[in-house]
Amino acid sequence: MIEDYIENNKSKIIKNTQELIKIPSVYNKSNDPCMPFGKNINDALKYTLNLGKKLGFRTKNIDGYCGYLEFGSGEELIGIIGHLDVVPEGKGWTFPPFSATIVDNKIFGRGAIDDKGPVISSIYAMKSVMENYDIHKRVRLILGLNEENDWKCIEHYKKTEEPPIIGFSPDADFPCIYAEKSILSCYLTMKDINSKTSYIKIKEIDCNNNPLNVVPKFCSITLEIDNEKIPMSNFIEITQKIIQKNNFEIDIYKISNQEIKLTSHGIQAHAAHPDLGTNAISQLIICINQILVNYTINLELFDFFSNYIGLEYNGKSLGIDFEDESGKLTLNIGNLDFKNLDSELKIGLNIRIPINTSVYTIKKHFITCTSKYSNINFYEKRYQPALHISQENILVKTLCDVFNKSTNSNFSPIAIGGATYARAFKNCISFGPNFPGQTDMCHQVDEFIEIDNLILCSKIYAKAIYALTNI
Image (cartoon, rainbow, N blue to C red):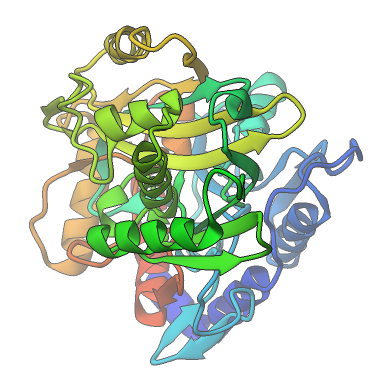
């Protein structure tokens, strides 16, 4: 019954997913109180709420911070928590990132798998249950708008609206997620940089990588060289040797006899899986540090990075190479920023911490290591506590059972390094859309969702919704 409804509406699911992907809902700072995350994100919310109205749901725009679609009746509220914002598109796409191009039965586009495709799947899953069953609980799809940054949307929702008593977020992996690592976003900073680098000075850094939860694909640095101390030809020769020695993807551009620009190229990936990418910032920092060392110049922040973090971070140098059932601690260098006004240099870090490791342990190790340098400061930007629910919990067992029966499989619940809205509410876990063995395209260039999986997700979500109404 519910599967037939979804199959009969397959073309609409595909069309609505494409239309939503075509809205470039990347965060933009806004002074408009009605659209606090920018016009494009607000357009994505309006589109989704209008779709909900057409399908017969009750809808609400919650002060431009978030919204919801709802059906059913009763005191108990079941929640599905998704998001409509996306990370920046990045460079190097085969197809325009907001074109929603279909090739080889895949929809390509930023947000296809994270989280617009799953949101549309959830909407039609709700509709199929609404059309086929008379349930005595309410089901609400909460639409977040700031998931890729600071979660201000969910903070606002929790202040003004009713929390679900149970639910899931369609924003990770099947069969279901029983644990998510905690996340520490932090910065290493150093001021008055150019007074310490003598005849090689930083003029500008262009990173364009925000938020910190993306492995950066691009970073460039413009340096000003004192030609009386270092001939430009000598500097270029030394730099070329260092790039070749390390096998870095870094281009050299001579701007003038005094200025040179180094542009580093990496491979974009989700910060939860930094091993799937190549960090453009990391290789650029190591390259610049080796250049400075060649000219007997010590820039403490880059020296610290080279000694304690490095290109392929494993945690041993910092003493934080922790691992448990949720996996290894991972660290992503997410941003490199330079403020010329006060000559301040900042390195932004995104650290995924195993569920049995305290964040205070991590911070203590950073503070201890940075204290060996006189000019480096460490500060915390944001901390998100871990999610950990027993694998015997009825929610975990129910969703895992729904998936296994739907796919004729026998998978067990898993732990991940990603952060989903599931951790924002009690008795909520993440559930799909990535299938076991599938490459995670979240935050990557050429992000896509397979159409067959998009439809299968909707069928699985419909069965899950109905199962949760009967708990």
